[in-house]
Image (cartoon, rainbow, N blue to C red; front, side, top):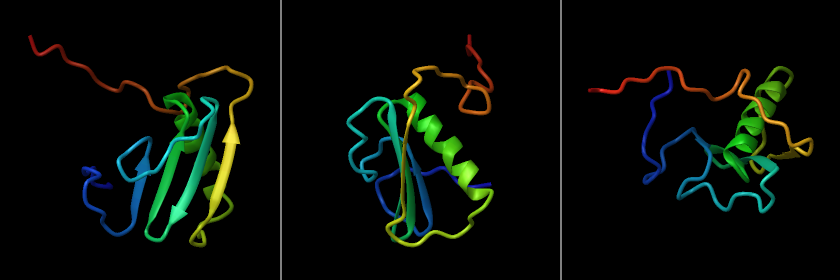
Length: 99
């Protein structure tokens, strides 16, 4: 299992998902996402949470045929059909009211 850490200090071989202080600017269009490799970390970022999810799903698709990426790798995409589903994506897995 990958540890979840803060984004303040860089560590080797990170995967940054969504907007962080080190992931750079999100795509300007809400329907766009990008997957980028910078030196030792992979960035998956979208113009919104649902397009970030599309970016994660796109990376999973790419990993089925490609397992190594050169520094500077960039993959961009869009969700132009404006539909959104959490099927096979981020979802609430557990909740407690703590009352």
